[in-house]
Amino acid sequence: MNLATRLKMAYGAVAAIDTALSASTRPMAHRTRFLTKPLLMPLLSASLAATPGSSTARLPVLAAQAGGWFGDVALLSEQRKPFVIGTAGFGVGHLAYVAAFAPRRRDQPRLTEDPRARALAALWAATAPAMAWDARKDGVAKVVAAYSVLLTSMAVAATRLDRAQSPAGRRLVAAGALTFLASDATLGMRKFVLDDPSPLVEGGVMATYTAAQFLISEGAARLA
Image (cartoon, rainbow, N blue to C red):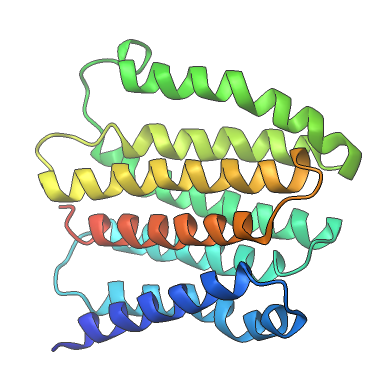
């Protein structure tokens, strides 16, 4: 078993533990997450760096994972300032993902004619303004609105990779981006819409988030 595989297995184990902790109501579980959650992105980044290959997509993806690490650590708190910092970290991460995927985009169909891009834009229009409106009570409406644009842009870029790229890489990246959308939508519902969400909702957020980051990392390693 090579180093990259061992690191991926370690990431999966820590992701499973952190997900279980996030769904617990025990105060000790939350405190333990100060150990588990910050380990996620360093393990994933190390596994990507150790994976054989020479794709130039790796550097921006590693930068995106670094942004994810800042977001992970900041969002251990539910307070406004850490939320803004964490969201900014993830926003920078999505810009880095766009930098990895946009140079590998296909030319046809054009962006405005791509049915998948249109569907993602429609989804944004149907959900993001309402979520930002609900975020007013926490004073983060503008932050949520800006972040939703970056997240959707990342998803669009991830679903427009050129067909000359590895089919497995394209599928993994697209699946990861869409799972990221689902994870953040669930997070937004938990934080801004639901009055008394079950801890299981946070468990769902972490399960989909850690899966999304892994899928994107695996796909990026296969890009040319």
